[in-house]
Amino acid sequence: VQLQASGGGLVQSGGSLRLSCAASGRTYSGATVGWFRQAPGKERDFVAAVSWGGASTSYADSLRGRFTISRDNAKNTVYLRTNSLTPEDTAIYYCAARPSGSGSYYSPSSWPYWGQGTQVTVSS
Image 1 (cartoon, rainbow, N blue to C red):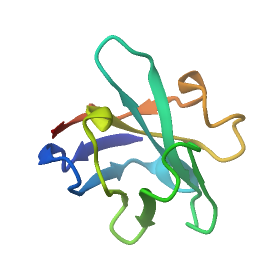
Image 2 (cartoon, rainbow, N blue to C red):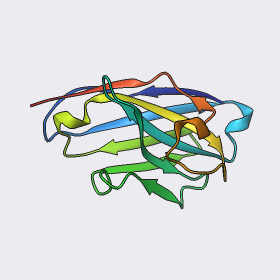
Image 3 (cartoon, rainbow, N blue to C red):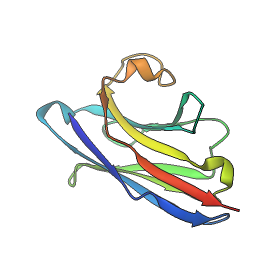
Image 4 (cartoon, helix red, strand yellow):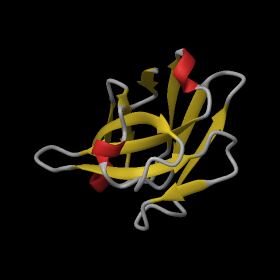
């Protein structure tokens, strides 16, 4: 699976962004896709994940209600809508993919495929 994240940028506190993750490759079929983020000097943290069919989603508890993950398999694209952004949301956002049923979402090591990341910067 090859993944390309985009949609990041500079936004004021309270603003919104929609991140996109474009996927390609034979192994994308059936894959679960997730988003992680990594702030400077911190570990890479789980943000959200969506199953192949889109019916099952999972979120980090602290982000539930502000972030929404969705996917359009006809376009091979997964989206992350981020609302009510604060400076604490500033990070590089990465999309990742893995076969379904591969264990805990929260560990980056359980995701074998990664995109290059897109920078989100929220100004106060």
